[in-house]
Length: 138
Length: 137
Image (cartoon, rainbow over all chains, first blue to last red; front, side, top):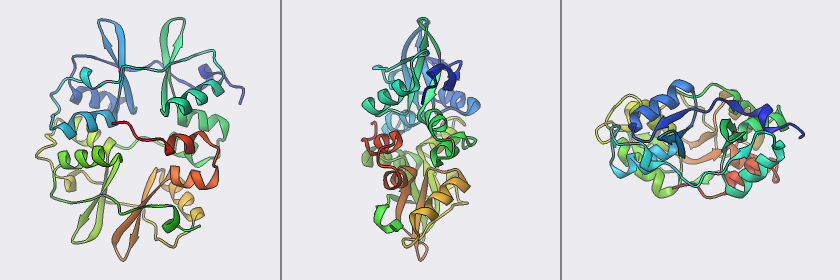
């Protein structure tokens, strides 16, 4: 695997404001067909929230769609550089047991790279690659 | 290698009239992303954490008053406990799903995930490592 993260990432990361509701965050995930969005406060990246976070950190705590999304986000973000080799992203995912990483280029968020993106590069015929490339459920 | 050897047994199941909040609590408590929905002892549907985000939160429905039966996916691919790993992988590919219920006489007896299948087929893959890691809470 010699590809760079830049070649495999989904460019143009999607974000929501810290103060937006979890309903709005869920609609953003639905409309863009993604499972995670970055959380931004005062133009500063402050975390990442996944569809699962909305469920286990809000719905399971009897919160409804109106609750703010910011407090649910994970703050200890692990990122990868756009010019890193794909193997670096794989290693970071293994070490931190995560499926998605923000991609940093010149100090800015340039995109996201998922375990499925990397599987598609490593072995396009693998079951994970195929499932990852399928349309998201709605 | 059969499904009964690699599946997660005793799947978490809820009655169709239980609330989405209850389903979310079960997902958190058990560290899972899928609950099965059962009607009169038979598998009638499946709800994932993403389904709750997309079909409930994104629609501004109240998870405390929405029933799991109203948002469950009912057109399910299922496997039997004696089906082999290759059949499981084929079904995962055909249906583009990550988890498949294992059913005996209509009743759910397990769930098999793409990670369970990858662990059997490719012990060194990143997917098998990440799949074997504990879930986030």
